[in-house]
Image 1: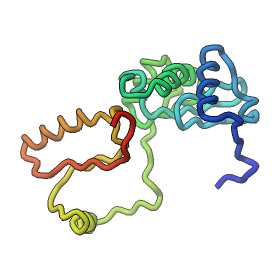
Image 2: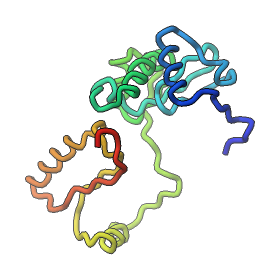
Image 3: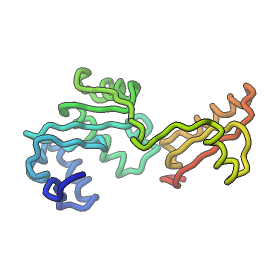
Length: 191
């Protein structure tokens, strides 16, 4: 839990902040004062910003805005493609969720390899494994489904690459997988 005196509220609305971050990346601006002169900042969204004195931990979950820009809105694409490469190169530490994204950050953004670490996202501390039959029973009761199924949980939008998932599912079916494909998630951009 955070104490109220530990929380710094930024004086900018989201669009203003996005504009400031883009300008900061292009013009070399630093954001120490805006953030209350912190010692360390963890950016869970991967675009920094840049600091003069604070140590930045930049967390990059994917770089699809760079590799597949058509999957993103213009604002998201502009913000991330302008700010993330700069933040990754300058961060004290860049965290990624997997080795594939780590390699992309190093190769595509020029981030120093020794400062980029892949750390898998953890399970919720309350997660408890259960026997397969106990897990299937609520699905059976609620949806009437028996047997195997492939489950995808995530926003339904182009960057989740559902086309590739359906292609893979079709190959599974052709190889004899008897189950169905189940997509669960909110409608996203370009749904």
